[in-house]
Length: 385
Image (cartoon, rainbow, N blue to C red; front, side, top):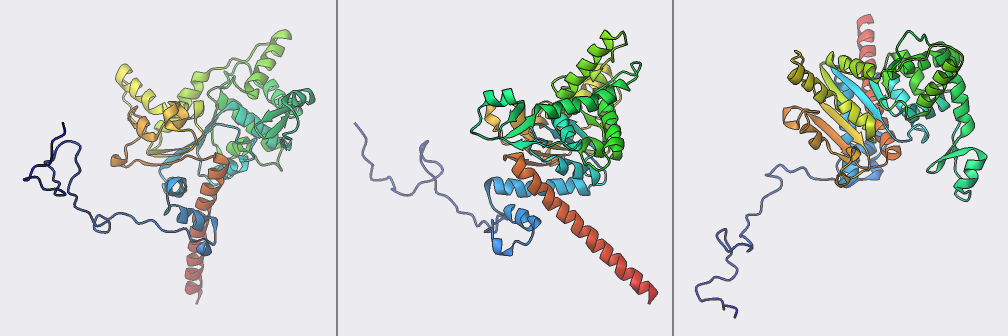
């Protein structure tokens, strides 16, 4: 039998000492006094540039705010003269025609090293040698595409002939490789870039720009790519003709990557997608810690200060691609925000997020250059008069 309310109970006068589950008398705060940041409506009538749009999005909510805040992180990395930026690439970004964005980041000095899937570099090599990718016709079946020699990547086609043409380029590079020099991915990518700089002068591309700007490109899962298969074929050809095979050492990549990062004052990472490139790059911190703790090496325990990633994968699937930077802090991979870490995470298709974020930051940096040039011009005029 339920008990009736007794006369000494005060209906509506709830307090902190009430029974478990009861509500409480609340003191409602003033958001202005609490210094909360107010949101602002996105007024397209005031938008005059991509940067205007992205800045306005940062004052909204959800993924729009994530995208706007991500641009601030990339800008901070670009302006930090002591920050060495590693860009990691996964997914079919070159097939999706995003390669020139990465190329421009290299040319502007905003990316200092790249860690990528081999497939992404191979498809980029298709572009850099003047070949094209094509729209897929949804009415054509995959069985027909196979018979016609068209490899489908979602809504886009990579003609098999493109990859045969890439193999010809690779063959020229590999045939000139001295078997006495142990190969690793960054050395091979450097050699491919050198070849493109000579043979494809009018074409732009990631490998060519990386060679010209001294940006190393690492491919941790090298055999999982057209480049890896071409190297395997070349080794079989060498063996069948009585020549020495080329030896490949993936640990040379790891050691060179670690040594390069150890020389830097601050580190940033700009990740598209996730997968092996992201994890391989982020394991730098644990690798250095293990060398210090287990081997007794006297090394600075470096971690990434900046992190920016664009990837739509949610965290609850448990995969590396969707894991947040807060999780990586627990592994010793990133500097916590309380110690100066600065991160941006955008859960969106990179073919949407990457162009907007990068274009906005380019506009900011270009605006500063124009303003600085104008000030110098005024000073020069003043000196002459």
